[in-house]
Image (tube, one colour):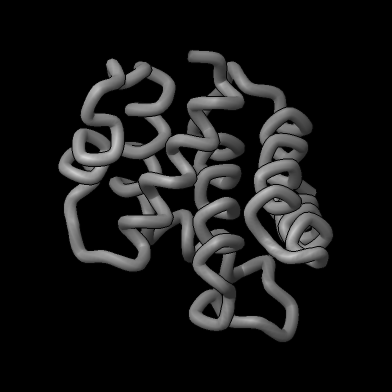
Length: 126
């Protein structure tokens, strides 16, 4: 599984976690019943779930006229994954994390999601 696909699967799993009350391992196994769980995918899901409070705090500090509670689950989940990558995964260039997040936002969000995600992540890395 390539990293783009792993991010997309992680997004789908973490989105489930955001709207349902289940643990990350259970969500990953439930979602990927027949597939072998990729190590990068596991790292993203576990990392975001474990560091969610710190990640949310980082995102909140860089929001203008928004609170994290007002952000739709799609954008919030994408921001969490990208923020985790930026802050905790050293072998991924920042611009790759941002570009992948914007791509996910354009795919799963509305027409303004990509710009919103890009803006928040740009402030985080500045």
